[in-house]
Length: 257
DNA sequence: AATGCTCTCAACCGCACTCAT
DNA sequence: AATGAGTGCGGTTGAGAGCAT
Image 1 (cartoon, rainbow, N blue to C red):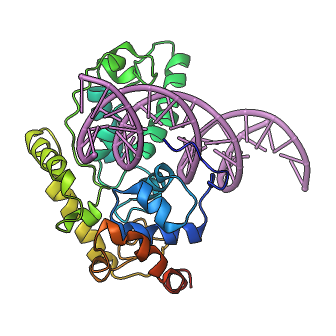
Image 2 (image 1 turned 90 degrees about the horizontal axis):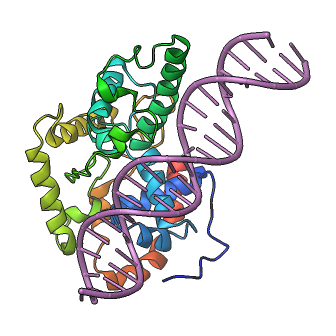
């Protein structure tokens, strides 16, 4: 246990430079080893914080902008089915994160709840069935739902360095499990293959934009060139060496400039 | 123009789970 | 089997933007 949660651990909003740095290290080491990335990157953030930033903001496959009516319908549908299983719902909406959906639900459903209160007939304004009124966390239906966690692989899980043989053999079983569960779940609108295909297509469409394009709905995907970076990866024993060897500033200039 | 309110969303926290040792 | 580290998830909070008065 690390009691030395030193005061130098940064919190709060991320700076652009931190973002660039994180993207670089995630593309280098994959989006699994967050504690390691946090250490090696010199970001002074916790691994959790790094993961969250990546998953909710920096991941190339993320959609920006408002939910489409279709997505709204899906959220309603899956929430009525699964309750507050945000990450699970998010897997059904490519490009959307659990956080995003959670926020969306809170604001929109709270609004609807208020409206329906004013309309004096609770839940009557909801388009969906029984449990659709379960915007409240105390909802017995939701809370009593069994944790039938079919471990699906989330869309924002790039797998990163795991795709490279020997990079983290321990987790092969986990990946196998994800794959299996995906195939077992047939009610999905999208298969994981389709999701990944979508992301690939987006990347192609987007071209090789070197920096974030604030006017684009989809975040650019080729911030970094994976293939050229993968060759850096060797073994755990070489990690410290790697971090000191890495010439990061040059790359960050390229991105920020 | 100033103020207050509402909405949105990024980020944190705590707990639970998985896996390696 | 027990334990600790790492990771994922859901709930919550707070800052900033936008809107109404």
